[in-house]
Image (tube, rainbow, N blue to C red):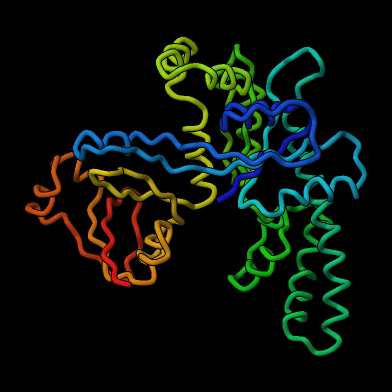
Length: 350
């Protein structure tokens, strides 16, 4: 799953991207930067207390730093820039909530402006799609007619400045919407980029943005990108000390990734053995064979069953033998929907 980081110029989005991925990105670029960040997971680390292993592998999230949108850009330029975000699964919208003395702070206006720009870009795409679908529908193409009917509902929404994600769509309609890559159809995570004097996001600016996000059925996380960039450059011991000194329990990637997973509808399962203990991110309620496929396509293809238990059972009972003796070890078939926190051994034959 890819999360695109978007924000107006000066919002600090690239600083946040550097802090999360460790990549050194300097200066303005019209090309997107792509990086991967490991997701901190206390449960994964605790598993190793009960199952000693040679290797610990965290789940990861791919982040795409989208070029900043210059103020006053025309519709064509906006569409060119936002085209780079059409391939991502969710949008992380960074909003400035810090005072650097360069301009007044107005997170609500910034958030609304970004939403308006994405709506405008989607409207351009939708109107062009209407023209194409109309021409094809004249030949009797049923798929084109279905697209045209859907676009007839989408265009008025966008003209009323309503994002597509606020509409109600069935599965078939969602597939069409996804194919067009509409940005306002994607789930949004707001990031309030705060100053170092307010690392936990207590200011009125942050609270205003949180309220705005809630009104739009979205989530808002407060992060100090500058501080996180400094922390990312330290070694592990110094990181913990610095986090404690500013009143933070963990680096930003933790709450940010968990919020992103929630927005994307993801859950986590684990595989655990002497060679490796690893976390895997999958869609919530993913069928067991598809979950197995995240490890290797052969395991999905030859899936027999999943032997699993919940990670909390390991923490309370200490060993897999004790879990079996307590009747907590389960054997699940192809129709099993994976649950967050499952520790799994997939049996397969190819």
